Image (tube, rainbow, N blue to C red):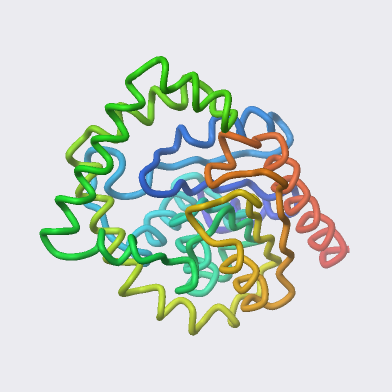
Length: 271
């Protein structure tokens, strides 16, 4: 699609680009996409390293792949939604490719240094980090293979069984272990660079966090909402880290609200 054809689409509600976390896949957004329905076009991608074919990389690598996905879809700009590590990728896009980002929705985002915990540094260590990551991910995958364990998670965290089954298979793949370690190291290398530039983000931003998230500290999300100009902090009571599976309808509402605000501004700009 040509640049002029892409530009013609900017008068309508912008499409939504969905970036998963680590570990993860495009399927993590299935329930959110279902809740969005026909209200907006959605583009969920497997980030590099998580599709079983491409090489993994850091924030810049995933950001470039996300921009290519927009190009292939003929989309000039989108509401970019990122979960956890994907939130850092989305913020990187907003810094490096501001013309492609109509708005940001950062979900449980690991997008500043305050979001890192001691275990993140351990899992990024050479050799030791890979062994630890492989052990943790494979162990979690095996645990999720148990129907009894999945039912317990369903009751506690409201996570659907098909989501947990897919996660079990993904966590037991060696390529997932490699992608995880590569991205852990990228967090330590690239987050300081991103954090210095968060103030450059001009896209309307919502930072969404569950109040029961134990992976990314709530204080890190509050700090992030201060680091990005005019960012809105939205807290989901009782929500945990994997909000797309646990609270898909609420996330869909927030994403569509962001898209509608962009559409309204575009209409006034072109009036």
